[in-house]
Image (cartoon, rainbow, N blue to C red):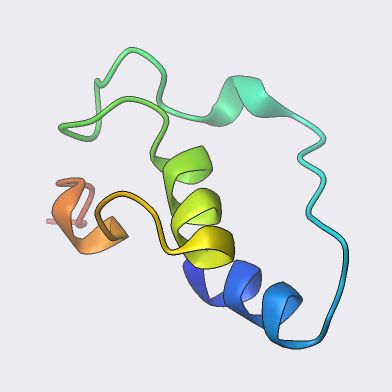
Length: 60
């Protein structure tokens, strides 16, 4: 999501829509932080918060 959100910003689009939010890890079961998808989008669009590499979601 980080690269996609950076592409949206770099190409002058107005934002991103997320159709189904329930697939995001809101109970941090798979990652060390909740809402990794929304965090990645926010980081790509606004450069805020820590990057996705810090979420602990890497596949093992």
